[in-house]
Amino acid sequence: MPQFPATVAAPGPEHTSDRASGRTSEDRTLVLNMGPQHPSTHGVLRLVLEIDGETVVRVKPEVGYLHTGIEKTCEAKFYQQVVPLTDRIDYLCPMTNNLAYCLAVEKLLGLEIPPKAQWMRVLMNELTRINSHLVWLGTHAMDLGAMTVFLYCFREREDVLRFFEMVSGQRMMTSYFRIGGLALEPPLGFFEKVKKFADRFLGNVDEYEGLLTGNPIFVMRTKGVARLSAEDAIALGAGGPTLRASGVDIDLRRDAPYTGYEKFKFNVPVRTEGDVFARYVCRVQELRESIGMVQQALAGMPEGPIKADSPKVVLPDREKMKTQMEALIYHFKIITEGFTVPAGEVYQAIESPRGEMGYYIVSDGTAKPYRVHMRGPSYANLQALAKMCEGGLIADVVAAIGSIDVVLGDIDR
Amino acid sequence: MPLDPPITEIEQLKSHPALGRLVEWNSSVVQAVKFDRDELTIWIEKGAIREACAILRDSADCPFNYLADLTCVDWYPSEPRFEVVYHLLSIAKKERVRLKARLDGSSPAIESVTSVWPSANFYEREVFDLFGVRFTGHPNLQRIMMPDDWEGHPLRKDYPVEGYR
Image 1 (cartoon, helix red, strand yellow):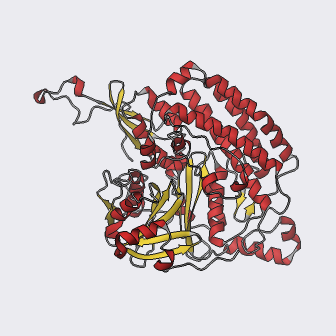
Image 2 (cartoon, chains in turn cyan, red; image 1 turned 45 degrees about the horizontal axis):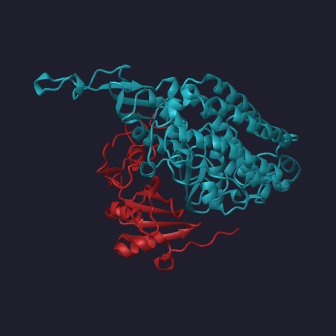
Image 3 (spheres, rainbow over the protein chains, first blue to last red; image 1 turned 180 degrees about the vertical axis):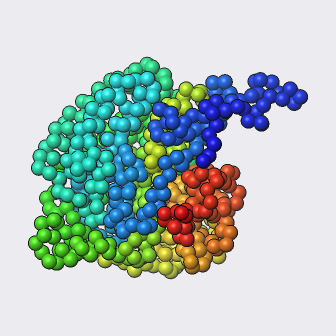
């Protein structure tokens, strides 16, 4: 077991005051341990802060407390058995993970997905983004002392989780997207309920903004805090709203469209200030854009099958499996032996709520992936955190952590 | 949708900005290329990886300024055993390229690219931790996922999935 230092560690040998060398108390810095169990680190993130009075001199993130070896586990599973593992990586956006994995395997197989499945994927993916941003907004505001926003955000998040439960039977670990399409048809009345939600959600966003955007306490805690320049953001690999708030105009949904995003109209909010407030504005604007895409998806939802016509890869419907010999054989084969994927490798990147989420899959032509690597957006954003905090005040570290929207499951995998 | 056969001729792929720039700089570092499933892979001579990355990052017409991902694949028991994989993205031109460097199984080591992209820091630590590949010139090459006193490198293919019991 690693030995953790006490909450306030004694100054290291290099920091002890040494009268002989002429160092005074002003030269001394204090090493302060924050986390891994700390309510505002959003999970089990540990930061080792070196502070000089109230000023942060150095930040050292320590991760790995949630490491579960998912990449290793994937190598021992059939391709279709990996889908439920992907939910557990970034647990705030399970469908984004499902989508990235499914797209990567479909690219390896060269599989075409029917239009209805694509539109459903966009619809659910944007609802996932709303879900993730609502958790971020609620917890971020709570970190900065605004308790009410948290309650409002979780009220709407509950609605989104109910939609997840309707389509997949699960609130968080959905596994709704499968290789070749979707797991199930959306139930009766689903679209009407989403439509009702989408119609009133913009009013809810106004409500959150009314509590925060003009709130002098919130503005003072966020404006000009934890700045990150565009050059640093690119060099440190930051992604998503963290990158866009620094003035870099990139969104993979627009620049490298996947699963039919090229058919949707939306704006990509970009700010140039690069501070916590700019990241807040970007994400809240994305909430509005996402609900616009949900409405477009509802309006243009095509009819048709939800699974690709590829019996060797896609499980047959339950009904067919019970009545047709052929379907039963395919079902048995897929479950017991899996399906083989032609040898090769792909890197599929998609825009998750936190930035570029990439799945790198290497196939050796068997039924199990040879290597699966997940490029988590939080892992890269965490490297930018040190740059943001250094030179700032210790109270702003909490604002900075909230502003990069860190999910530890995504970092440690 | 049947898959197109991969293209492996350097001459046919020279129009890609990354390969064009590398061949123009020093064609001897390019060991092999493959264009498969709309993705370009370039195998780089392992001693030249840092310079090749710096050349691509500073390329004038298509700067690959963003290191999207850095990881490793273990091809045990064949040799050269490890392949370190770099995924680069050009934010301006929205182009992607994959660089690979092959390493031997006995004491694998390669030059770090942290001087080109500071973001490589965590990725290289992760590869060092889980594969045991050393990155020379890395500022802080320590384990990142596993405990400091852990023995072995879990993502190697000769490491059992359930761990050593």
